[in-house]
Each structure stands twice: as structure tokens, then as C-alpha cells.
Length: 83
Image (tube, rainbow, N blue to C red; front, side):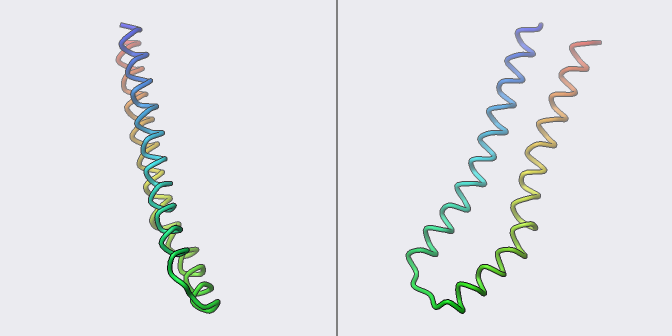
């Protein structure tokens, strides 16, 4: 039983890291797109200010869901193992 639990924890860890890299890759693709497009300083400043306002609404919730689900499944598996 403990081997199965360890395997489950490793899989959950890999999924959490994969979700984190997925969110990172999305932001990296946006940055590459912005580098390819030539913008004026005013446009870059506007984009930067927009990013500051929207990043907390898009990236942070994704991260919260990833780690919340991982933590809950881990706690359920641990409780199952104990009882």
C-alpha cells in the first residue's frame, strides 16, 4: 500500500509541475509575440499596465487550482492510507 501511495504522490507532483510549466509556457509565448511586433513606447507602457492588472486575474487562479487539487488529492490519499 505504501508503494502505491508514493507512486500517487510522485504522479501528483509531476502533474503540478507540468501545470506550472504550462502556465509559464503561455507567458513565454506572449513575450515572444510582443518581441516580434514593433511597438511604440506608449503602446508598450499600456500593454505593461494592462498585464499588471490582468495577470493576477489569469495566472494566479490557474496556479491556485493546480496546487489546491494536488493538495486535496494528496490529503485524501494520505487519509485513505491512515484509515
